[in-house]
Length: 90
Image (spheres, rainbow, N blue to C red):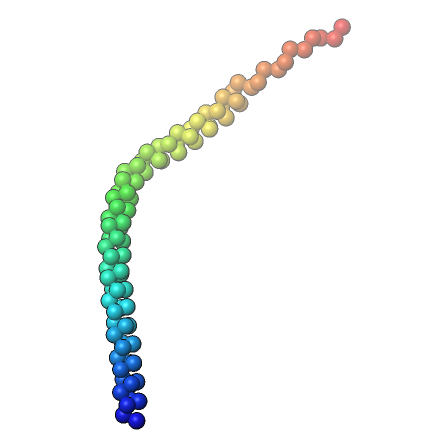
């Protein structure tokens, strides 16, 4: 009976050691991923800061497009397409 308990204890100890090794490997992977995430977050923050300065340019471009649309509409209404020349019957 004690030999069975000893065998089970050894098997359990071996399993726990394997689990600890796996956890240590995972911890190193998690640390590496966290470092990569921090680096990517820093790059993303820089890109967001650059985009904030270009919001003004974006709105100006949208305004320019709207003004061109309205201008085109007004030109079409103020200067209608000339009617084709028709020869009077007779």
